Amino acid sequence: MSLPPALSAAEWNGVLHQKDGLAHLREEFGKLPFSAHAIAALLLYDQPFGFTAQDVQDETEVSDYCAMMAAQNREAGDQATAAKFELLGGRHKERAARIAALLPPP
Image (cartoon, rainbow, N blue to C red; front, top):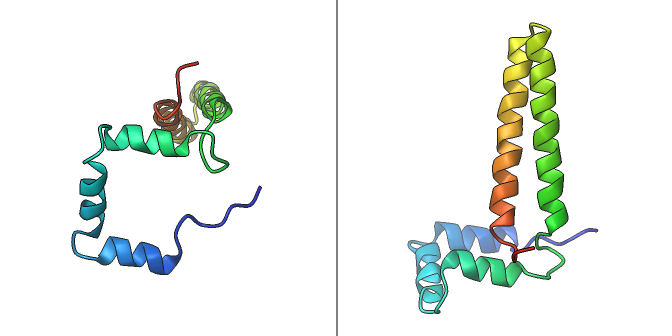
């Protein structure tokens, strides 16, 4: 699936480089009865560019694989590669948790 960028480079530039541009947008959303986190979850829900439980499962499986590879490399004496897998596995685990926090309960 190919998705166009959410904002053009010019739009990103305008929002990110405008003094207090992003803060102003967040302030406007702050007038709603939901947190920014909740608004993000609601706006992403059931959208082709949103997240799914499959995304959480995929990230969790990659994290588990990285943990297994870290252990194998540690046992083989390759501490540098083990450390790299541990770092990557931690990132995937954290990403899975962030995505899961944007989804409705199973």
